[in-house]
Image (cartoon, rainbow, N blue to C red; front, side, top):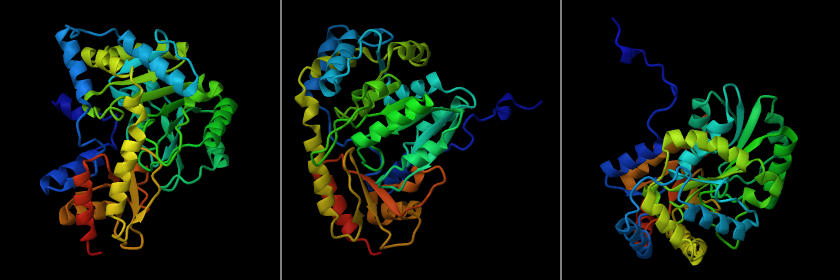
Length: 387
């Protein structure tokens, strides 16, 4: 009799070990500097840690409400209103999630059914497509170059069919560092209205923007906000990626359906951390100074590698810097990323891993959310590479 386990039909047959796991393992094996995976090397605020300790000692250690601690939802509502002048009701339109990844997965699950199409701009973060496919959906790719320099909205419109249900956007963007403009958001609004599409907006890097640019949220356009699931996270904002505290903002009717799924995935999110973040948010400087902090780190890294021969791509936000090596080598980006990890001692992510067809533009992504001495040492090592 055949084993039951041998008859499992994979729901994600094309999915294997992620590039982030692969490159981080390679960095560990060869004791390389890990500028591949996107997590801060430094710790979060001591004040925030003290607040967590405070609420643990106060006994806030049991289940939080399914939708999240009300104090945190109220703080998010106030924060978003201050930034975009759009009001989300803390009781009916804000849900605390186990990181932005859960928020994105549940939002996609809420609107996507078997046969529904979802527009994705690639290069794209790797959690979008599996979530679509797990729900029987079909991704429609709008392929852009690694700099995201221009979105041709006529091409985007041409992708839409009667089966298209939603569009996913990400600004500031991982992996390119591109920040969407007001024109882009207006075009998105027109597209979504014309074809009656849901919008899922990934805005986890909202407070990491450089060179005087501003984050323009999907929430800032009322007609767009009315059809959008806005997903955010405190992991990137407060250097706490391991806490997995995120949120989803959406109209009341959307949120009601969103919570039906959320409650059976995690039910609730870690309680004392929610109380701590709620209190920490009372001081806006805790997140409003983040752009200058990371802009300094971007500049330190870029200055450290300016003589390597690598061509810097403009990073307008996030904590990633893309570099082109097309004038230095003809190697496939994955092969080069592995070689630089093994031989030079610096790990990166090949941009082809963010494309459905693994399109190779000879571009690598480096994470500069690291201590200054780490960035300087990485620069020294990359300067020694013989091409």
